[in-house]
Image (cartoon, rainbow over all chains, first blue to last red; front, side, top):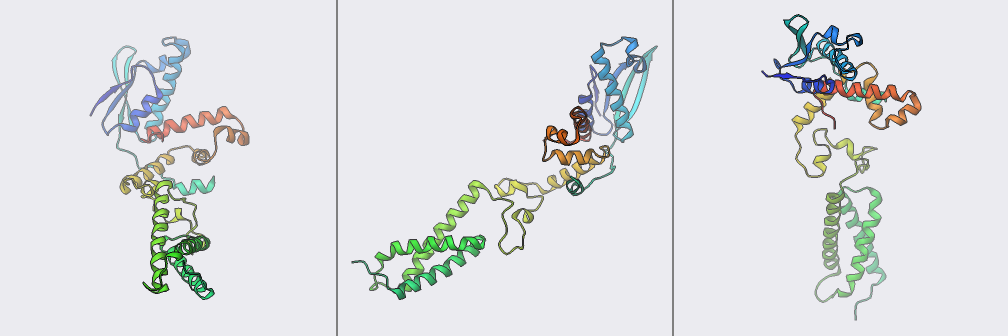
Length: 105
Length: 187
């Protein structure tokens, strides 16, 4: 089991980690207070970084919804949390036969 | 003086060339259209070498058989060499296959690598296919069809038909990220 940290919000890096992670691997995708950091009015992050944080947060929820990882958070203090994803075993999910796609196209 | 070819000898040469060409076509698994070319090559070589035929040393049948066997070997070597150099078209029709192309006979786990003499891993190929099918399964409805359409068209071409190029690019980015999260690397 390894723990990985995203030093800056990066949706592509998060997806790459999800694709390579072994079950039990952990990534900290944000440190702070996500609900506040993600809104423009807070001005706690540069605008470009804030927008990427929103995308990262949505991707984390997407990963949880699709069975890739468990979303977890740890409280360090007031308005200070670590937001983690813990990789799950690869979900079986739905399979789509490639023949059906090529026929449809 | 080299012996002249009598009409009877010519008929014999034509028959032998015809039979040898058909044998060679079957051996090389060429199409029926290639018989005429093979026959002409065999016959031309035979006529060129006919001046060295000496009836005192052997029969015409033995001479023709030897010359054609050697020429057929050279043709077969050339065809096989060209196949190795240029590969084989997957769209090439299989003789007598009732419309079946060569691509239909190549197993999925062999792929193009096998045709070019490269190592193949059938287990890895099958697992990769399953990974792709599972990856497509997590995409939103309609994105799978977009992937299939992008396999033979560019985003610009699709945008000309479907409109909204920026929307298409956003969907492509979303697809890439989802497939990356599913463990699929870009080709």
